Image: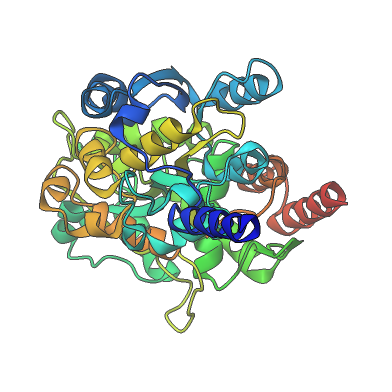
Length: 429
């Protein structure tokens, strides 16, 4: 009799665990109420909206008290790694793509919360597939929920092309010809004041990520697993293209970062270019001299017979939960709520005006504030993570130096990429 009773109890325990999806009891709002969730998130208009609007709403709906420390991009990684090594205060962590593999070492798997009763429906199929899969290459251990991915876009002045009877360039030869045509003295004072092209030529990630789409559009690639393959004819040709395009850029383009490209475009000084996708809400903002005049499109290819495998580099941000969180269930709920389809779309409409969901490409309210979201979704759908591994950020810095040396004329493209390949191989050893 005792043996039968024991077997019955064990069967009930087993059934309970199976149907709880790994969570011992159904989560109710009363379970979450009163929990404080601390988050470290980089400073952006999205984070402002989280703090000012979404955190109070979350508390009203669930009783979860979301406390966000917002810090600049340049400081957030160091602060996060310090927290992990010491105070272990933050429940929600915020990696960008180049840190996602590094942060994975102290991120909690969240699979048991996905689909669990009482938790938000993440509508996984609506995430841009490539973005979701590259943040979460192992779907048996999902840690990251993307909410603010970004990439690079090719932009052009619709009005200037129409005025000159020009079409949007589809090949590199057409790009050079159009850039030359649009570089001119507008006011007749003998000084060029409209430049046919612009890109962030200053040393750093923005320059490297401006080179990457042209590497791809020539049929090239960055890495084959952990083997660098960018030291190729395609890589050299892409660098030579940027060097040639400097003839039609502002004379101080070597000092241009993301901010300078955006400002020159907003002020009407640049007719075409490559920039971070964050430029799109800026050109459409009230006060922009080019509001409604900018178009975005796929990057011109080296030639139309080439079939690129990728469009541009994948960047951007996701949210996850630290494995040392003392409020893991509430933190998981918060992450899933913030990145859920309706909430993240609202956040983008009122914040950075970007895209993390396939459905955003058809969202009329979002498109009314940023008509370039459809292009961004398209580029993100074919984008590629710079490097899949914890070494991504460090390898990027090595390559950034060599790309800068080539574009500035300090080194030839062939020598620069050969040195970059050597640097990468030495580091990975």
